[in-house]
Length: 418
Image 1 (spheres, rainbow, N blue to C red):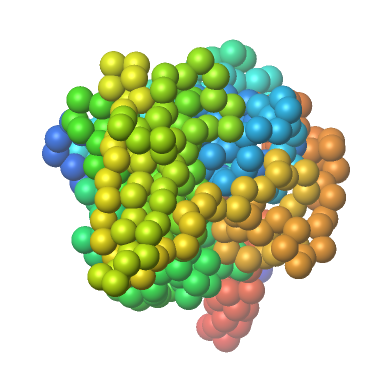
Image 2 (spheres, rainbow, N blue to C red):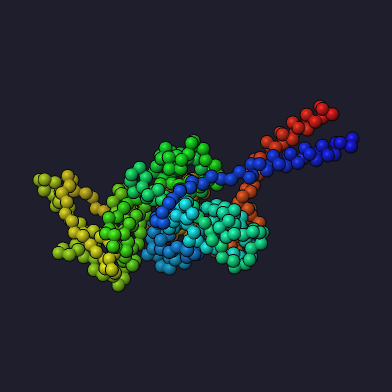
């Protein structure tokens, strides 16, 4: 009888170890090696952890609020749009600059100021929606004791990104760092972003199409490339399909798609105090065109944007002969600043604001910003106190049946040997 107590403790220890094996599995993230100092424009797939103003989301990532709106095809002409409150659980594409740091592509431009209830786990898993891990924040800031965070401490938040020469299959593209959710499959993500399973597997060097919650994969976004001269301040402008960008001191807006991948620029809706946008030796204004049918085809004359040079908007007048007269160029459909998220946006891969209200029943999000199982957030840069993304409850419970089987088998074997 004396040996039964230590034996039971031994079995219990094995049970607890096995129960936590699944919890310690680290999600995978696509990493792009690099060897130079160049950078590119990339995007983060970010899910709001609470209700946030547009300006508050921008502050979390230290980016221009207007850039967030245009990346998601949200109309910037709405009054006081930067202070519009976006609903919790809304998915956004956040533009960032992707750099080469210590031989790996990442962004180190984001800094976070800690609040009283913050932990590294809550900052990583809640505030930044799993785009970074607690260990990555700890290493980037040389934190020896992660349980002790000073209130108001400024932390570098290393965020994932990829450039891949801004091409995909030799065509212009930008890349979105996407955090896999429980409902995601690789085929579903491929359909959502108009790509293929094979392309996603090649980009991410995947041996199989299996993905799991928390993985971060690079998703190629087809884009419209500019051909501005190298001395233009907006040289290299690349606009993802279905979105638009503001350039030339907020005087010009350039869109991509949705029908093609040709960059189309017009005067911005909020343009003020701008230089002339009329093409020289022509009555055409920027973005305008004329067509003239002839026996040889269709003569198309366009006034196009050529870049922002020394504070001046430059334009180019061009005439081409085409087999058929093209339809009018137009901007992609813009959406109003979202006030709710739809059922689709909760359960389909990476919804964009363009889908808001498109046939789905909207779910109004409580203004408190609280979620089931999460305490109310204390503010725009707050956290869900006591919630750790590294130990999600469903994953924790899923590991226990396996460990229980081991426990029963070992216990049975010990009873036989006794």
